[in-house]
Length: 59
View 1: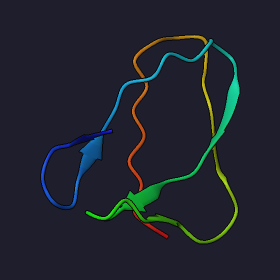
View 2: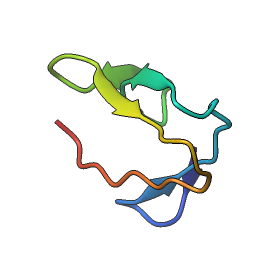
View 3: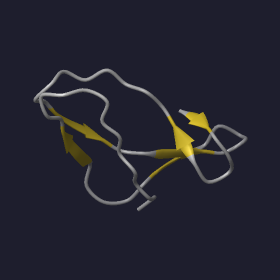
View 4: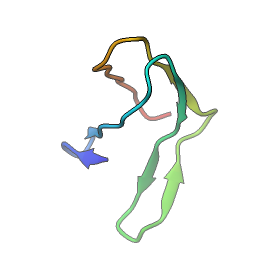
């Protein structure tokens, strides 16, 4: 994920049309320790078009 600033990250992924994906965010500190966000995995369903955008906040 590209870090746009200290609070915003961005990445591009290719997903098939009319598909549902599951995802979850992590934070990685300078020492390499990983913290997963809490709660269930997130999900997103694409439509038949292209160029979707998702805006989330850390859980």
